[in-house]
Image (tube, rainbow, N blue to C red; front, side):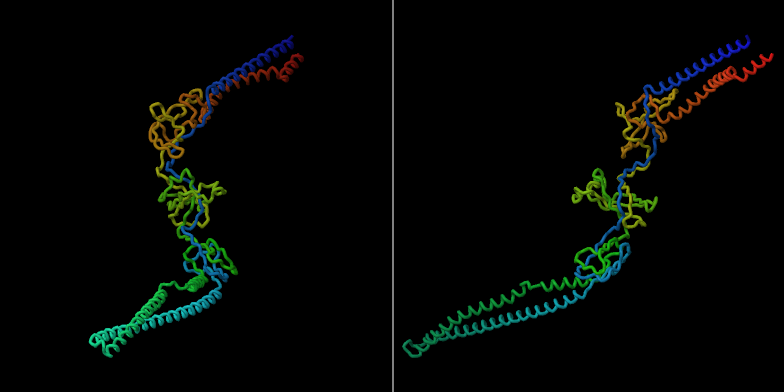
Length: 484
């Protein structure tokens, strides 16, 4: 009787405990489901951020390689062999330093030969001039002599005519004087004709002499000599400026091509960078604007610069090439104002200052909303008791839009305040956001406050199970009873 009673009691207790456990689990599941459902229904998960004080100065970021403020190519007019090269890429040189020498022997020989030819030509020219001058003098002398003879004959004719007028036409003297007059007339006529020819001869001789003054002589030899002397001077190439050698294009034994670039020297006393400017920015860049330059090679050091040149003409020569695909073709030069350890070719970054505004509270411009009266506001999260948030209006006063941000000049928003980083959210929307993690911790604490009771119930149930299902305890009782 007693043993059967105990087994019946054990079954009933076990059944009760199991029922209690099932009920508790169901209650907890329903509660959790309700909680999840209440959090999820009618809400959206959005990102929130804190309002920050930021530099609203307007910059254009560009990149470029450092180079000397000026670059000079060194060439030689000498068509000769390179006999010595005294510098290499990277060498620092001073103005006047000898960079290279060329073989001058052939050029010197040509100069000597050309000078001889010029001397012969000058002698020949002088001889021709002297002959022409003598011809002019002779023509002038012949003309003067003929003129004097004509004048004398004319005077004699006048005298004869006067004498004839005093003579008796029937006399022999009259006949003689008449004959003499006729002879003089013939002589005068011949002399006048000859004088005309002599005058023309003088004029021709004079023209020949005069033409020699204005006639351009053959200067080819002189031009050749000048060119050879220039070549001779270029047989010793010196640095035209002080700086760094950035290109050496010749070696000893090479034959120089006149005009070819042999060396390039950059004046690194002042450095500059040449940068590409995007088409959308080129109209905002002007000479005189400040720039801030940095380089990985110099760590955190910042250098001051100024826009010294702006090329507002698109470089059409690069159209259709890879270069054209990566740059707009517009460019600017930024001169570095500070002393710098930058080397030619080092990569740099620069910020061209379009407008300097300093630090101010700012928010992304596309998050700023406006009511029907044109008043600006932004949405901020307001915590609710159930752990959700309501999108609440926060009135602000706005300034200028700089890049992606709008300046906040007044209103209720302060630095550090959270605002909703989602333009699709409307005022009054119920949301879940990053700040929810804070509330979830609070909710967890509330749940923990409830859980101990559940654990006690479960523990009690466990204990009941252990008592009812404790085989050893029951067996001990049965053993004792059996012993009795």
